[in-house]
Amino acid sequence: MKVSIIGAGNGGITAAADLTDRGFEVSLFGATGFTDDLSAIEKNGGITLKDDKGERLMPFSNVTADIERAVAGADVIMLTVPGFAVENIAEQLAPVVTEKQVILINGAGAMGAGRFVNRARQLGIDKSFNIAETNSLTYGTQAFPEAARVEVSLYVKKVFLAAYPSSKTDELLDVCSQLYDCLVPAESSWHAALENGNPEVHPGPALLNAGRIDYSEGEFWLYKEGITEHTVKLLKAVEDERMAIGKAFGYHLEDATESRANRGYFEDDGRTLKELFNTSEVYSNIKGPVSINSRYFTEDISSGLVLWSGMAKAAGVATPNIDAIITLGSTLLDEDFYESGLTLDSLGFSGQSAEELIRSV
Image 1 (cartoon, one colour):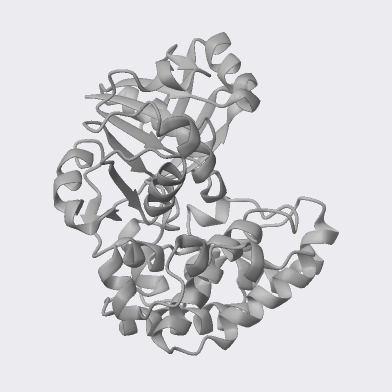
Image 2 (cartoon, rainbow, N blue to C red):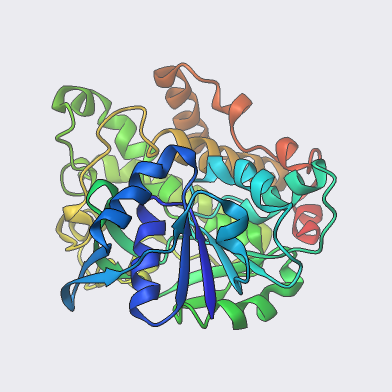
């Protein structure tokens, strides 16, 4: 199978190294602003991959800033880009992708597949896209693009996948499972978005540590110092509201402990959620957020909590804690996330009930 990876950041460089290691034919596309990252790979002669098997160089040279060249002949085109970049990538990719190629958005679930299709339609591109998205990146990883190096702490054990529309999920799951055997079917893109764990874990506790983050000047570790006996209460309150939204939509959602144990981030051995985060071999090695302007605030509020809040209102579910985080985050960052974030209106579902939203995808 030939795979084209769109996005030369954390997930993209990791996927390029991993899939090459496993025998796939891989190309890697980086936008113009990432040409330095691509140059580092060329200079290094490949990507240095460190994981539980040790450290080795994955010879890799098929890097390009030409998206048409990147995707030519690919069976699967995998997007490893932040949520806010989906529409921009759609503008570049939709004109050149064929109806036979499969598009996999591999990252934090935020209705990316529907947004891709919507942007294509706005551009007058009326193709029948084979497109699916996950609820979470398939790796626990840190990439160092300037050194063409990745350090994989976890190959995730369970990731939800939803096609858009959901009637294609089984078909696209068969294809994408050839890349990742951790994939399981989600009921819809709404379901995948509610299984995205980042909006639940990141913004609330990070918000309560805002002063510490400012003072630390980059030396802050959310999972081992910011998840405390008190900040975890806000995390759990958001979890309760998310679970209530899921129930209203008819989905059985995994809670914070179950989801991360299933993914492999820690083992559910009866300890508290605080203890599990603080001592996780994966999480405790992740630094950040290093500033208030990080994705822990911006993306996880705008593409996560704002979407959940809108879904809750459509279903008649109260979300006082989610809404409080959105409001306070808007104040701290001088940005109205209710205005700029991912809303049902911006997705084209204005005024629809939960039942109508379920049928729409």
